[in-house]
Image 1 (cartoon, helix red, strand yellow):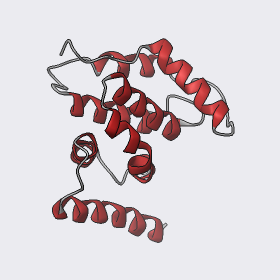
Image 2 (cartoon, rainbow, N blue to C red):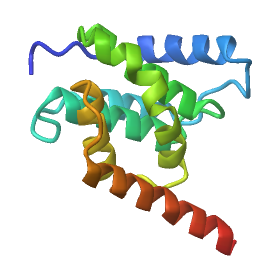
Image 3 (spheres, one colour):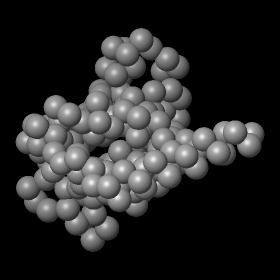
Length: 153
């Protein structure tokens, strides 16, 4: 899709640096530069990610679960998602994004929310819609799965 504005590797690294600085620090450093470059390139593949929502979902999921940085992966995933929304003029969705997605990013990192469920969540966020009842139930089940896993540890 030619009209989608993508995040460059340089922009992603700057976002990472500023996110770590502004959010109180952490262990600074890149673990997997190849992974970062791969995600930022692959998200542009319209055969795999044919629309904006699928691209945003992939970007968020991979940066959250990919552990490309020594610290701040969830924070950077959120910030990159916000930047992607803003670059593509989804201003109202961007305004709500951090608040609506913060808890979900934690659940992605904990492997409780998979890429399929995340895509459904992101669609509602981009469309500035509430979650329907089925999605709410699926989110609850995903989060409960994590609680049961933690309880058994």
